[in-house]
Image 1 (cartoon, one colour):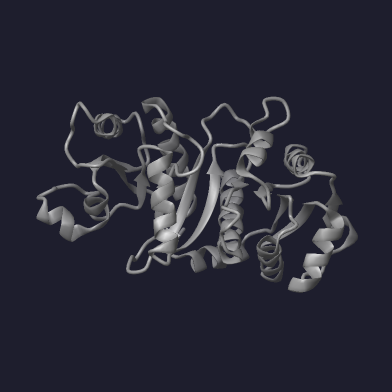
Image 2 (cartoon, rainbow, N blue to C red):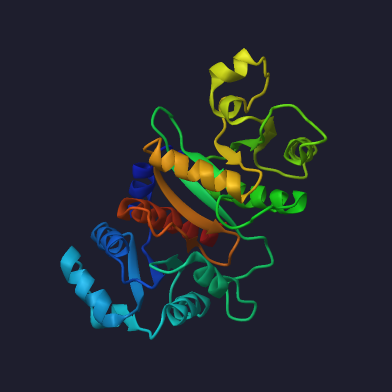
Length: 306
């Protein structure tokens, strides 16, 4: 498979695959329904929309989305919409679950429910996939949304999740930079120590399918010029495909900086669940939600064929 280097390429790839069914929790949102409309036009997905039926149908008319009677499932609350959407995936009436106009905590509570959710025993983690101006590849940031202060073992599993995801996009040996405030190991800065340990675990075959190095500052992870200036000799330096952030604060700030200062396009998924989980910010554009659907379609196809 040719490596996907742009989000429009992800859309094109999704169009070539068998459509999946996406269960949307709290679908009564203009941006969500615009993404649903565009995904249906491209024939990359079918949908089951959970939420206030009257509101969903009213907004659908405004965005030019035609719905059949069986595509909208009325629920009395957002919590019920989340539970019903996750249930649809769990009983194989849908392949992907997607967050709509609902708080992430409520949505994830349904996904993580021990009895009725989509747990697999793995650590669930979020990846934000960015198409940043001036870069010839997609930049993956993990984890900017789920794990608040991941331990070393949790970071190992976060890396394993994103490595499999990169493989699904045709990147068979992604370059991963473990970020910290500085690029040298400092015992007083735990992220630098953990980055060094993860690097050594990769070199000894404990984490496979990628090239991992660190610690890196952001500059020398994505800029060859900065890496050369600081005399960093590494296959990853300046060429990172994946940025492992030390905690949720760093990830969240980097995510929003790329969107609001950098003008980047993006899609976002939760990895490690039984089925693909689409998790974007309520403030993200319908374009970002459409890209996320395309990424989920690709991931669903990959998981079926692994």
